[in-house]
Image (cartoon, rainbow, N blue to C red; front, side, top):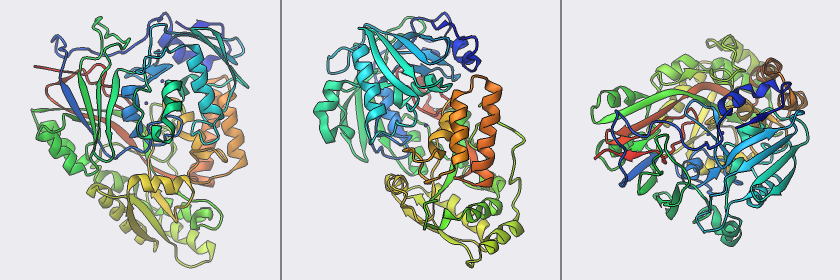
Length: 531
């Protein structure tokens, strides 16, 4: 895991939630409490935030990691955003109109926004960004923006996007990286260095001033940001934000408890009771929209090109034990599919592997006829809890005579191997989730899409996924999504989903106005320090 409508779309009922969320709203901007406990929010100060891994890329076009977006939400604005409830709200687009056939979106854009390099944000800039994301060969946004046919500048602050077919999730896609707006001048001047040094490229509440790989990223306040709090306060409040990658969960927590770090969204389950009992800290937790998973390589010639081996691992796993006795210690929820409980496509009765079936797992391996199953699992180095989880899974699979060798690598190296479809066996990689179910399944299962890290290909699934985008009825979309789930999780598995994530936020008591979102990403614009 980051998104006033004129309505003439009675037939496009799938967008009812979006319409209801934005109806009558023309200004947009940050939502949530600006001050806690009735106190007046104070300006100034610095907050250091710890994330669980270093980033890979600051360019939304090329970014594929959850942690990348921690920086992006501080320095970039997108066309639309979501509030803490997950409703899409205006952002750089103040309102939008959808044509009766659902194929044209006309966006009215803010006229008071400048990028950090001083250039104007307008419709021409928005067009350049969307065209860059959807036409560049290396773009990881190709699948998300595949429905777009053309982008047209109507006038300086009006943009029209025409789609090839109606696309139910289109607006939700613009919440995140596909909708993030960057300065053309800065991107083009940055060249190859831009991916790690995106200085002055955004228009967001904070300006990137320092980037030190594997150590820290420093942001200063953007004094000209357009956003205001619900009470009218000009945002942001903080003078500075520092984001630090700290891979080990114990070290992260120690940094918070000693005051070197004031906030994190990654707390190991075993530590949750401790932080809840600590009067110097504030712990927030809500249901997330992402999942944890094992990603096999289904490329021909690799072990898991044979789907029965994936099914055998699925049957041998004990999801309840992994969640409740592993390092998560019950934080989260057992999962069997990619749709979180808050998604309309979620089916609480879908439990194809409710408990381990060791005999079934052994039989599937025997049916392949190539002897015992042995494979390698790649897990991120530097975090004891991740290794403990892998060792627990290893012991479960051994009961079915499945040998799983554990290999640790840097997280970014694992992702690189996975994106090239070069992982020998499986990887332990999750997904932060998106507000529309499309974002949890489409790119990961559609043949040839940039984020299809398992090299999965099933023509029936491709057809069903296309239909989930063009269907205009939510009930029909749910039926299609459930068909996709049955195939990709059971009949011809693309990955193994074993738990839903919890969205966490741990802060020092003095940190106020920090909201937790279902996508787990921090938004710093409303954060302030109690003095």
